[in-house]
Image (cartoon, rainbow, N blue to C red; front, side, top):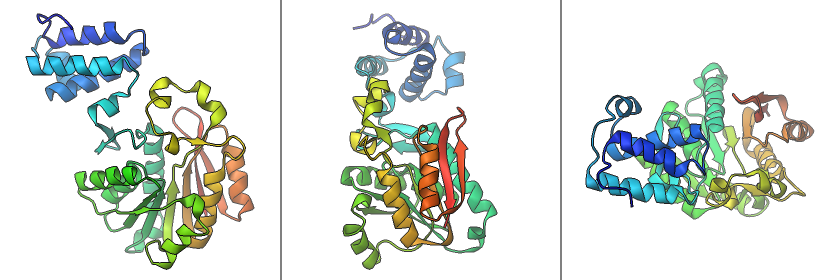
Length: 301
């Protein structure tokens, strides 16, 4: 336990540095400590920096101790707090869903820019489907910014879909969620199509599992030990399995001239482009993220 006399924001900031320095790099500790203290104190980062002499009460200090103890295990701070921010919106997160990443925000930004400048702007309503929706961050964010679109999310995990539905409600948008396995596209998926639950779409987007088993050794424990492997990993012998299945689904369910967007494994950019070209998609564009890594693709049917 920390000393009860240490109760100011300044003391708390120092304790984060001391407790986590052997686990996280300095820049990550800085991000974590302000995120946690903002959550505990309801103060902004700027206020925390300006009012370091402010005291934390006993309840806040106890919560701080509990959070630091969990952080020492490698558990991601977003799971500890139970929420995160994505594209300016708040999302609930838990061990059934991946924590939304900045590169996925870049993918959403790309989709929104294409909607703004494209023919979809005049089609009301137009339809968007996110495959492998997880927390629902992609469809909920798209619906929030394109209110006249009909937006759906598909996932194999009922636990993930429950979280996604909560996030739609949290952000006051209407998104339809569908439980289905895209890899089972020739049977169960077709039944969803026949029932009318899956329709023709103007945009299909997916951030599917794309980390190969051999890449596990390069992953940080706070990802490997806590985030759902179902949403992360693919077999080494078929790393593009989900992209093949989703591309085949898009060939059937994407409107002519519709767009397919993928977030991709940075090491498989050219192979993914070749796959889409082989399946007769056109105007294929491979785009780098802000870190200069091949991270997303747009293709037209």
